[in-house]
Structure formats: C-alpha cells, structure tokens
Length: 238
Image (cartoon, rainbow, N blue to C red; front, side, top):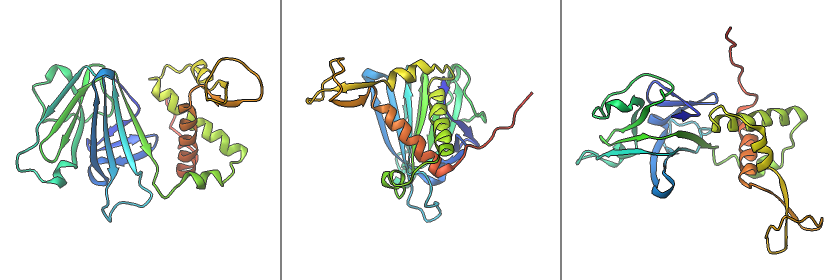
C-alpha cells in the first residue's frame, strides 16, 4: 500500500507539513464506492465548531484505488448524528489479523500488506486494503481563484509553485517519478470549433492541454504556495 500522508497519534494526518486533525476539526460526510473501478472515496468537510481556525482546510478526500478488500462494521444502534460523523481513530493494521477491528497501531506509514482502519465514535469501522491511498485537500473557501488570478507571482514564487507541483506527482507515483509522464500529460493540442481533436496543427484553433487535470494540479500548487509559503526544509540524514 502506497500513501502520500503520515498518520499522527491515530487521530490526525500529516500532509506536506500540514497537521490535519480529523477527529476535532472535520465531519465525515461521504462514502463513495465505485465497484467497477475498485475505488473508494471517503470525504470530510471542515466542521462549524467555533474552535476551528478560519484558515483550516475546507475539505479532505481520501481516495483508495485498487481496492481488493472492504469491510464495514455497522454503527451502534443508539448512536447519534454527532457520533456518526466524528472519526475516533485511524490506523494501519496487518491484513493477517482481520478478526481484530477494535485496536490501533501507532505507526505513521503502512507496511506492504497492511489494511487501513477508520473507527468512528458511533462504533462503525471501515476497513480497506488497496494498492494506494491519495489524500487530496481543498483550501478554505474564502481563498478564491479570483484572489490568485489577481496576484502575480515573482520568478522565485513560480519556482516554489513548481516544487509543490512536482512533489504532488512524486507522491502520486509512489516515488516512481517519470518526467516523461508529465510532459505527455501537458502536451498542447489544437481543437477544432466543435472541440474535437484530430491531431492536426493549423495554427488558428483552440489550444488545450492533453490532460486538463494537469491544469487543476498546477492551480492547486499555486493555492498551496499562497497558503503555506515556501516548503518547510527537511533535516538531512547521513
């Protein structure tokens, strides 16, 4: 199992220097299982509690791909809504011990054959084994796209945005980074008046990127830099 985050104290996540308190600051709002794609998405939104900083992330999505095991233990019969949407604990756990669903292990990264357990205050447990888990975030809603488009980036700013952009793709690839994949995805193509692609270059049609999702990733990198500033340095080890 590959992940792009760390589990901290079995209630929070660390993502590129961000401490994400899933227990206190976020409400669980969605479970989406695409059987044909073997994909499970779990979604949390920022809670309305007065203790939550206004600059807290607005949404957290954990996307599990290559799912080959899914177990859901039902919630307690007398649970209340507040318990339904509150995560109690999160833990990686050996897939060889699937009869145990009420314990945690204090480890930040998964071992190769680990499952991940989401335990909620209402007694519900979601247990998943998959190839990869991708954590994606949305910035606070008061930080709009207009804000970013109206503010220019210096040359140094652009460099740090590129660092965030490349780091995200490095994490998505599980450390198997290949710049040719990014070059292919960002290849410009011409589209005709009906928005169709025919591979021809006539020089007077709309130019779009091969994979429009790359623009989204770049914009997310811009937002992340605007919010977080320069990436935090890591202590080098010998």
